[in-house]
Image (cartoon, rainbow, N blue to C red):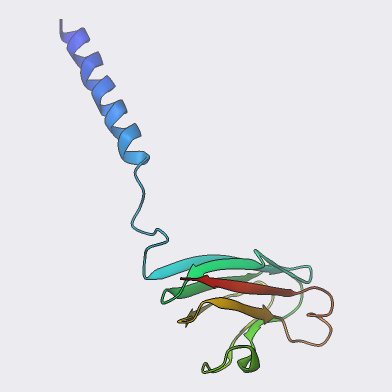
Length: 129
């Protein structure tokens, strides 16, 4: 009887762990801060498309896996009413930047080091309601 009871307890714990593990976490799209990890490498950003809702703060964690310096720039001309944002990341280094978009639309970003954007190192944040 003791062995049957212990199997039942193990079964209950396994089911509870499965159900708990399938529950959504606090960091969902309705959160006020959205974290995105962006890799800079081979003249590209991965991912190069970021989706966020208006009013959410975007927390961008940048990792430069390439052999040369890169930056991520949101040009001021593309964001009326917002100041330009930039993060410079040396090879092998990381950086974090935060930005909040209050107006729906698309906001391009790029690496503005000479030749990098022309080689395809561009992307955009798409802001929805």
